[in-house]
Length: 92
Image (cartoon, rainbow, N blue to C red):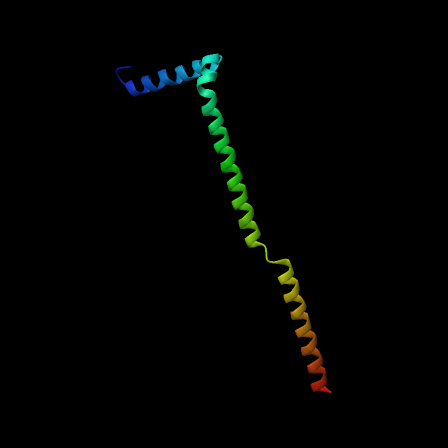
């Protein structure tokens, strides 16, 4: 302990945490810590919902508008067909 008091302290804390985790919760602990656990759980759930919604919006922003893409493809094909007709008329 004299050579490394910090290691001894950390080892003691780790042993205390392990023993505390193995002991069953008492009714008084449940009463005292229950509301805190509920707030933590509710906060984590809200954060997960917000992250999921933000991710969904990002994905939707990356996906092109289907109707707009269809209109552009139709217009492009129409322009190609018109160019082909005009080219055939010019050649004739």
